[in-house]
Image (cartoon, rainbow, N blue to C red; front, side, top):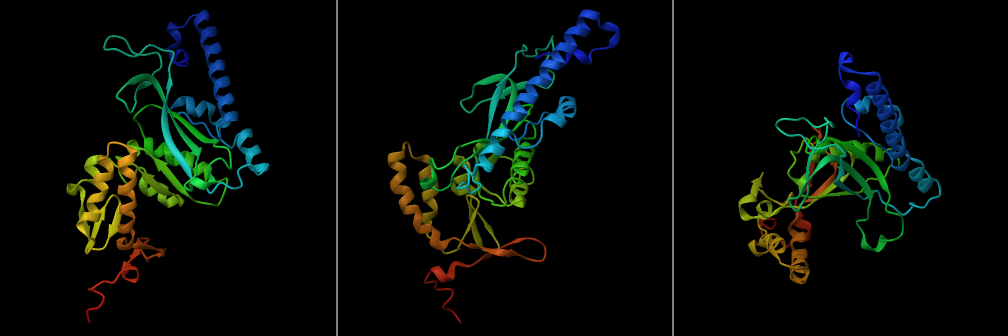
Length: 294
């Protein structure tokens, strides 16, 4: 979509070019307005976002209708955040020729393939409890159209902040490895500040023994805190589940992994004076020899 034509110098423009630029700009705004009616929110980066901000925010009719008719009343605010490619009509940039879509770039997919265009970050209504599957429509509650590989955490936080205006409930937010590698202040902490609990997919190095550390005496592994007396075979199950070849091998390992919950530190409902999360020792769930010492 030739939205960059209108940004050429006036001296180089011709009447035909001005007409084409005007038509392209009108078509672009029409597309954005259509998207804003289909989704909760659409946001673009740069000057295009500033031009279309008035028509790109607020809940769309489909989302408003779902809430007004209580079609999504059983939804517990569990969502899935994912980024997909929105291909561009323009040719990719090269060393000798820039692309007409100045804000487009290469979008790399999980399998290693790439496509030139934009990235669309989507917030989709999901369910953490399998029993709730099919009880409400899996709507696309928000969307951000942006340059690939830039500010992924900020865009995910944006759609989540707008989505938080629909309900006071706060559930789980599932995301893939692309968000796991982000720095805490780019994704994890802002999402937790909104009240959502991130559910992330860890890579093999992140569940290996080398990724295991200690924090104030507790064992830190896969983003959780465990008792220092946690049996080593239970901690190694995380890596075994990640390395399993198929679901048939994972099912018995996951059943064994349930035993580690007795050693997990439980998070308290209140924070300390500095706003830090507090965790309690799992002594009430265990027959701990340390607790029996005077």
